[in-house]
Length: 317
Image (cartoon, rainbow, N blue to C red; front, top):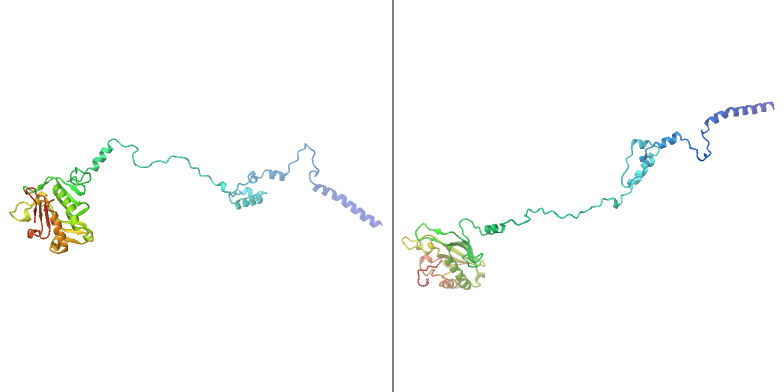
């Protein structure tokens, strides 16, 4: 009995000795709610949370990843901030976040180099430029776009030609290139009387004579026009009508199918010869002189047409 009492006393003594240690570990304040109007003391933990960066507590904007500073990474709420940034980056930005394109109602700027107004005298300068010809040519009177004032004659009017021999030359020469759309293989330098006579023959004599043979007339092969020489280039002979611009020589008639009727090769044939003889005959009238293979040896390979005015009638051979 005495031993049991002794053990009990020792246990009681141990309890009394442990009370100060327990009281030392007790919280500094009561866990009971404070009365109204009493301020709650601020602990060290609360002060550290209050001093944490406020940027980490702001709501994140969609579509933009958040860069964490070293201070935020070390803070107590850094894991939560990193998780929120990851969720925001995973969400695609809505279509409404794209900037709207605004088109202003601005009048287009004219960058053309054209002047805004017509300068004074512009129309007169344009007309002068349009009628200006190359050196050696003169303005063409008569029907606009027509040579010798005659529609259907195409070419240029030249300045007067003075020959090296007395009697040679053309006062008003032209360079004829085509007649009613039929080109001359070589442009003919003649006067307007000869040009108009050639057109009359082409219209009223040559084209009807050829008809549809070979597809019709395609061109005229010219072998001579103006030349300051004597007749047939013979010494002592009279001056040729070629020396005055009155004459033109034609050796062949090109056809649309590519063939050619030549005076040299077809005059004496049956079918082509008949066509050539008809063409030769119809030239008598528009021209004052018409020479062919039946006239002399100098004209066996071409027709000679001229508008000589000193004869009292037409000479056709």
